[in-house]
Length: 161
Image (cartoon, rainbow, N blue to C red; front, side):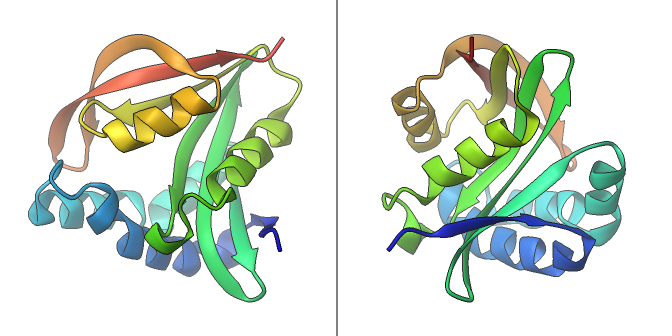
């Protein structure tokens, strides 16, 4: 049975925050310290920040198997580019197609667009591999700030037309 993807709203912010707190420690194990993870989670996934993103035109989606949440994604549109802002899947649901479903939901939610783009941590080779398998390629290397920390991220892009 495939997971179902549905839009999320402000009533779902606590679910998004809970999922992020469950997923990030394994997603960034060996890449970020526990202190960095805690700091970034507290700044990015608090309800006020999520509400700000929603107010700025971001949309959120969740993947569910029955009532069990498996992951979430968010994105926004800037001109002809669809930006995937967040895409996280519980470790036990990775490799089951949930990430593909969430990625496609975010792209479809803003279609038509000419290109999909996203930032991925330069050290997160697992995520980079996932995006390459979905047809994305490395387009740029940039410095970013998350929470109180500076990182090198890669921008991955995929033509949609």
